[in-house]
Amino acid sequence: MLKDNQAVKYHIKCSEGDIGKYCIVPGDPDRCEKIAKYLDDAEFVTRNR
Image (tube, rainbow, N blue to C red; front, side, top):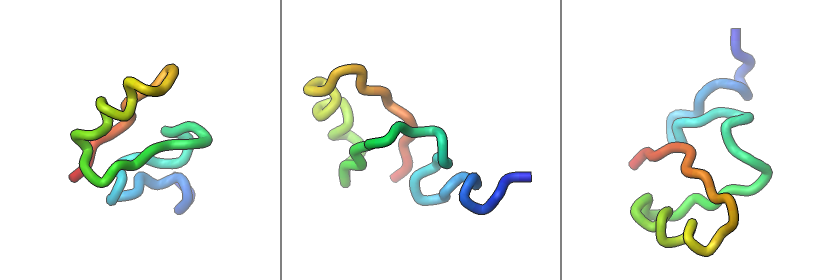
């Protein structure tokens, strides 16, 4: 059974451990690719709008 802090969060569709220490959450998901091209080793995790 998952602890409350391990449950998938409905508003971001991921849970603890799915992302790294830092993440960028743009207001418009279509901006992710535009932002990622400026970063090293960027990884797309989830999309929810």
